[in-house]
Image 1 (cartoon, rainbow, N blue to C red):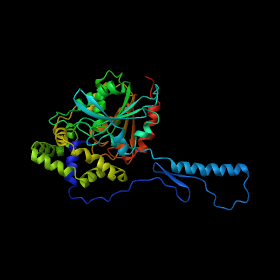
Image 2 (cartoon, rainbow, N blue to C red):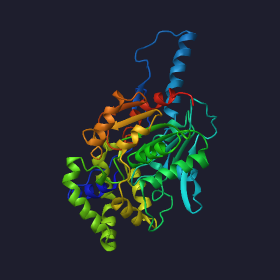
Image 3 (cartoon, helix red, strand yellow):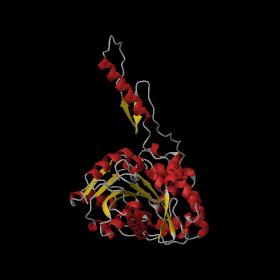
Image 4 (spheres, helix red, strand yellow):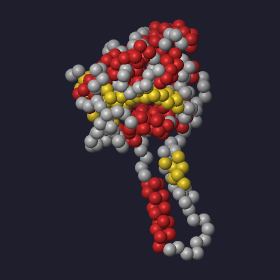
Length: 387
């Protein structure tokens, strides 16, 4: 999510009541043989009337149905646990000095020209576990990489580092060159989308096979979108926030307030369409890295730093296939804002770009409603032209 938006949302939500905690969905087998798989009930036939006689064939059918129900009930959830993610993560030394946290899932698979590797890039304040509901599903047919950008997650947070969108884009390209070593589909959310877009526009495109942008940000912070009337109204406040954050004591106070558990929960509730997706685990995913050394510096640098290249100027440089997935309940980069309107207009003009608007979904579609994202993403990946 956009950094300046998080601060503004925090200020707005200080006096809101605390939302009740949501329970996670779980797999169950009901007395009527209804199995909840990925949030959807699959009903298996049951015999509710007396059976006079059954031949061997009929018994086989009944046995098969019972077996299918039992197997379906025993299917493990595709979600990858946060603890498992942490255990699977590895370290890569970028530029000989910065430790970058990353994950590989499904690396035993032999990629074909129709199943390229994927690199997942999170948004502001997030990290690799934000993809916990997507990694295993995507890894069924692809080798999946996920990365913590410098300043986030378990990657280094160097004090005084001048964070920019261009730096993250270079990190992504270097990761593909040194770790993946194959043409890769970049999949990003929010500022992660913009970083992927910059990377694709700067590469010779032999490294980047395709681009998936989930609610692409207009900049590292919303000061970039000055032609949106909503941002124009907030611009004086955003500059005031910048000034305050440059005062160390004030910055520490604001940072402490923003990262309080219920404030994080309220911010997430305001940007997710599916409120049940905002669970305790998600709140912890966002909060935990904020206690790392250098986290405050990263927060201040990103909120107050240069917004970076405008995606409107970058898209004409892209000739590879692009899939746009956009939650229509996004308050940060709304479809009726300048960035949303621009991206919405592209599919009618450019043949290599596809758009799917996800109804009732917020700023983080992959975690908000993962099934909807997979429904659009998997067929698009399957029809990518051979490299």
